Image 1 (cartoon, rainbow, N blue to C red):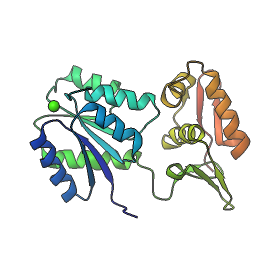
Image 2 (cartoon, protein in one colour):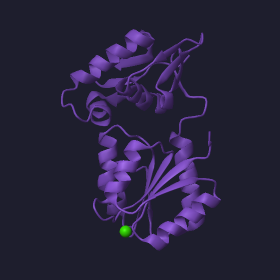
Image 3 (cartoon, protein in one colour):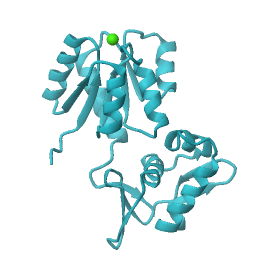
Image 4 (cartoon, protein in one colour):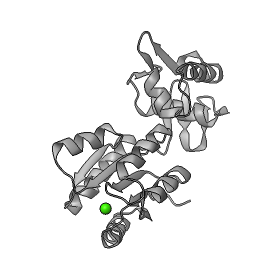
Length: 222
Ligand code: CA
């Protein structure tokens, strides 16, 4: 299997897209290009990526709209927005709407590569999986592997919910945040409680910790 990191580049300026492709390939990435927002959304939903690099002004659907849509669907692949709009208000909007980082055009090539590396380090699933109380979550395979080696398959939603918590150990998520990130098609936070219940039944009570009056966090890692 190809172990190189995969990046989805959404950029409608074809010369810039091609330049980015060469640059990223030289830095060790497998690069997939999209030239409009719809295509970028489709690719990001249907293929596995380690990082997203999106232009903001895209035909079809604006880059930030696509990122926002992905987050609502529970997609947590880290995203860097490239934009001609570089004032503080635009940056804040980008970060608020689901991008992890924001770089104004024209950009410095080395800075772009460095920021992508940082993003991947911060949020990428370590090849050994994500630590969860009692074992390891292999989010890409939708499997929990207990310390004794027992493998428990997880449903898509169980996997997405646990992966979201496990990528930010110690962070408390409100039920609404979890609803928005993982269950975009539902509007009742009761579904979050139901899935926490499923996870606890499958993986043990300690896998998810209830923070009374606030929400949920990953259980304490031993
Ligand atoms: Ca553009």
